[in-house]
Structure formats: C-alpha cells, structure tokens
Amino acid sequence: MHQYESEKFDFEQDISEKDRQITERDEKIQEIELTLKQTQERATKLREALQRTKGSIKNNEQANAVDSENQIQVISQEYEQRLKEKEKEYNTKLKAMAKEMSSKIEENEYNYNQQIHDLIQNKAKVENDLTNSAERRINDAERRAYISEEQISKLQEQIKEKQLDYHRNIQDLQIEIHKLTKQIIP
Image 1 (cartoon, rainbow, N blue to C red):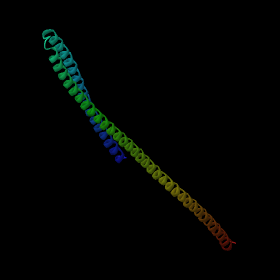
Image 2 (cartoon, rainbow, N blue to C red):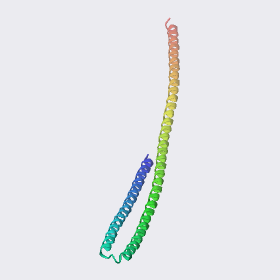
Image 3 (tube, rainbow, N blue to C red):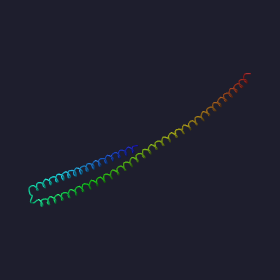
Image 4 (cartoon, helix red, strand yellow):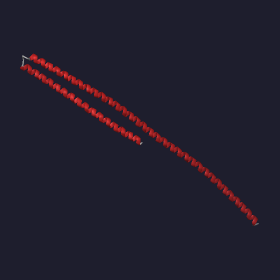
C-alpha cells in the first residue's frame, strides 16, 4: 500500500510538472501571437503612412510624381516583402511550437494513461494478494478448528469410556464387597 501511495504521489508530481511546462509553452505562444499582431498593426500603420506620404507627394511635387511614385512603390514592395517574411517566420515558429506541444501532450497523455494503468494493476495485485492471504488464514483457521473439534470429540469418547470403566470397577468392587460381607457375616 505504501508503494502504491508513493507511486501515486510521484505520478501527481509528474502531472504538475507537465502542466507547468504546458502553461509555459502557452505563454510563449501567446507572446509570439502578440508580437505577430503588433507587427501586423505596425505594417498597417506604415501602409497608411505610405499612402499619406504618397498623397502629399502628389500634392506638393507634381513634377517629380513619377519618380516619387516609383520610390514609394519600391519602398512599399520592400516593406511588404519583409512583412511577408516575418509573418512566414512567425507562422513557421508557431507551427513548430504547436507541433512540439502537440507531441508533448500526446506523450504526456500516453505516460499518464500508462501510469494509471500501472497503478490500477498494482492496486488490483495488492487487493488480490490481500484477499488470497485472508482466504489462506481463514482456511487455516477452519482447518485448525476442525482438527480441534475432532480432538475434543475423541477426548470426550475417551472420558466416557473411562467413566464407564470406572463405574464397572465400582460395581465390581461393590459386588466383591457384598460377597465378602456375606462371607464374613452369615
């Protein structure tokens, strides 16, 4: 039973540690998601700023509109490319973390189920051992009681025989005394 309690305690400690690890992974994923969201918000703001810059350049410098437009387009394309790369990088990291976490969860579930199975088997074995031990003790006690009853029965028979012998001897002695008394006193 003590071993069972010890295994149960170790099992609960292991589960607590796994829960802590899962919580840490969730926090990391939330941080990455927040960073991705902030990056997307910055990209939106930059697009808006580029649009405003584009508009102001059109208004202020009609002569250089084509050059400015090309520069804005190049800058926009470079930024869009960087943004796509960052999003791809974050998505790859998120997928890798999700896959790793899923694998860890599956492993933890397998270990958890295996430990529960082992605990159930151990508990059943302990209960079976206790039941068998109790049955052996009961059978042993019943056997000793039966032997004792047989011995008591034999002793009672011997006592009866001794009492019968005793009574016969007394009767024989009384008869002998009576005969002797008749011989002495005619």
